[in-house]
Image (cartoon, rainbow, N blue to C red; front, side, top):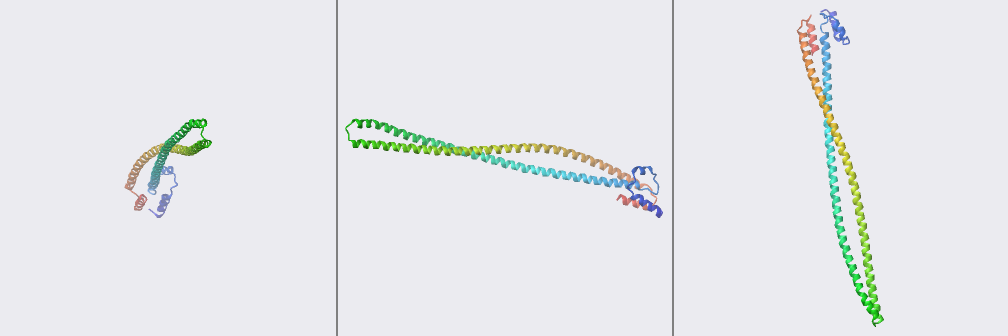
Amino acid sequence: MSAEDSEKFKIRMDDDDIPDEDIEGEEETDDYPLKRPVRDHSVNLRRRLTIITVLLTFLITVLAVAGFYQLQKLHESSMMASTTAVSDLYREIETQLNTLSEQIVSMDEKIGTEIAGVEKNVASLEGLKPGLEKVKSSSVSKKEHEKDLADIQNQMAALKTLVDGFQVEMKAGNEGLQKKLDALASGANAHEKTVKALQVRQTNVENEKVDLKAFREALKKQEEQLNLANAQLKKEINSLRVEVVKLLSQPSSGGGSSKLIEQNIE
């Protein structure tokens, strides 16, 4: 091969803009035997780049799924903590109700005792009435009569003091009971809000599980398509290897052409 022919051969080897239709229309000669293998090798390189891109995309998808699983695990831990908090709130409310019941029972016993004392004092006053009548009808001295009246007034004053103290205690007990009932109502409202929030979060978790199932199915289909593409690509690579071997086995016009073929294949 002359120097001019070698120069033409190099120019045609570097020219990738020639359409395939022009190449198919030309006749193969000894001057240009390597055009089609070089273009096939370029297509092979592009396909390899495509495979690498698909594999990187698949790796990124797998990492995204792993991150989503980790996020779901954190979400479930948060749900368990919220459930524990609600259980503690239930136990605290139950304890307060038991304490309140005990206080109500104690208050009832105290009220019964006070009422019994009042009835006893009233009975004693009723017992004094016959004596007063007797004093009025008898010929006792005025001084003794005044003493008996003073004793009766003292007993009436003591009874009034006892009744007033009992009313004050009842009022204080009612106020304390009302405050505890208000606190329990507030706790019940807060608990109801917490339960509603947990129900909303549970609904969100169910929706996320449905989305994750659909995402898994899509990922499985994509993996199947990728496996089919890999199998097809292996077939094409084997076919290209067979064609390259055939081209290398064909006689060339010079030793330089064989070396260029080997370099392009590498």
